[in-house]
Every structure is written in C-alpha cells, then in structure tokens.
Length: 154
Image 1 (cartoon, rainbow, N blue to C red):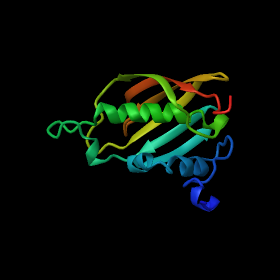
Image 2: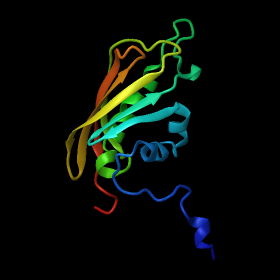
Image 3: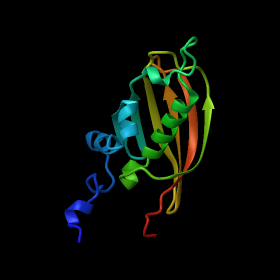
Image 4: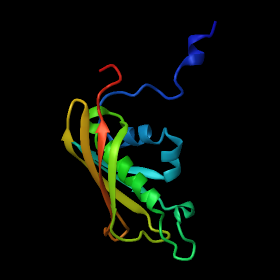
C-alpha cells in the first residue's frame, strides 16, 4: 500500500482568485516552462494582468537577423491572456482557440512586456486578449484566445 504522502501533488493546492502579484507569480513560476521564460508579474487587477519577460538567446529565430521567434510571441500572448483570468479563477485554464497578429519584429536582447485583459467571462468559456510590447512600449504582437473556464467537476 502506498503512503498518502507519496501520492500528494508536487505543487501546493491552488487557492482561489487573487490580485496579489507575488502570489500570482509564485503560481505561474511553478511551471518549468514559465520559469524558463523568465516571467515576472508586474501587476494584477480585476480581469487584467501585466507580465514582463526577460529575453533569452534561445528565443532567436534567425541568428543573422536576430529577431524573436513568432512561437515565443504566441506563447506570451496565450499565457498573458489566459492568466488575465486569475482575478476570477485563481489559475490558468486550457486554451480552446487562439489568434495571434504580428506587428513588428522583437529585436535581439529586447525584454518584453505583455498586458492581458478579459473581454468576456462565462460559466464555461471566456475570451481574453493580450498585447506584447517591446522595451519602447511599441506593439510587437497581439492576440485573442478562447479559454475553458468550467471546473473539472462542472
């Protein structure tokens, strides 16, 4: 028979909705990929979040041109829009669908900031959007996602 402590989840149980940036950052950074992205939570408000991402050399798509890969920008859009829901749900949720628009290249060495906002919140689905900004606060990418908000027991 297995001891119950051996089957406990690796991460602490998530609590409810929050607007505390330190608590949201702790929750986000539990994911190794999020940790690798070098994200920091700058601000959390009602249906809104602002995140900062520290540039990494692995983000480069073309070593000669030095711009950031579009997949990294799409990841930032998805993550930021998703976690805009944290003030209501206290957690990230599965992405159902997402669209990303690219507006300019994100340059080598450029840390990025992303702002996410909830557009519509429903019992089963929510729509949220995010804008990714470069160091001069110029729009690099933007997007909108559809997220599954129902709990596993619904």
